[in-house]
Length: 382
Ligand code: NZQ
Ligand code: ZN
Image (cartoon, rainbow, N blue to C red; front, side, top):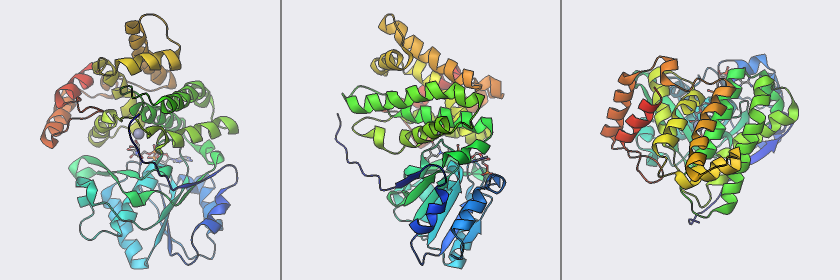
């Protein structure tokens, strides 16, 4: 097992009817800005619950943060927050609203152009405190310190981590997920599945607890996925999904293990260039990553096939089953897992590979996902 330090300071407040708790969790005297997306919270009653809880606190509001939050929108929120003297942010929404809010929180403590800390994330070191009311289980942003921000004019989608961006608390009420469109449920299942794989499907470090924990999350998603696609208004199923998504990217399964993240980095490019949903990009890239990196990931592929999919046969047969079963799982949820199914061809592959070359990116747990291999992975998914 590798050495590690673990600390996750986010307080989780989980369950039915818990949104009202925000009133006593936000420090008294804080000047609050509530941030949200395109309006789903107005239609499903979450806005009313949050504003009722914030009654008398004089909170400022900033709505309109879009999926794959845009830099141009977020800098407007920063201006408003500065003008109003905001010193506490409450994000109410999915990963995009939460990530956008982490950007706002960091920018409020940053002198200079905030795009700087996306180009050089080591500059993201301070932030005003933030908290979240999560409405979409997927990203884990409610309990981690990462964020991804897009800039349309540059066709860029870049990530940063800021040690000060762990939410102070996050409220997870599974009932708010009943209003989610089915497409977002599927995105969330694939995203949390991919987060788990990024921290599991690497090479063996004898991290037995982390392996079993990750396999537990994957098995839960395999079991719940088809049920959630059928309907997502059964409390315990949604509650288990919501907790799985949080646990998949809050650092718990990262203890003592190597991490990959190459699929995510390639996926971000597909979103930046073609606007595909984040979950969709992962469903396309992951089976290709497994196939092209089969030798490097062999032992873990076999273990994943045995323990998650119950595969039998020779190790080679099991590794093959792991790849096929993953693709089939995503497709059974309703994902299109081929680039051509999204009208994407060789031109995009060339663009991404050239961009990674210029950035000098060699990705993956051992840096072996070179631009050439990225080309192979994407060609495999045409
Ligand atoms: O904007 P509104 O109107 O709220 O609608 C949203 C949005 O259209 C809607 N929605 C959310 N909750 C709802 C709801 N509709 C009905 N009922 C509800 N309860 O769903 C749509 C998608 O929301 P979005 O926040 O974009 O989805 P998601 O949570 O999947 O977030 C995706 C973003 O997170 C980033 C992705 O790259 C992408 O930009 N990620 C963030 C990570 C992190 N911070 O750790 C890690 C991930 O790997 C990921 O990269
Ligand atoms: Zn993700």
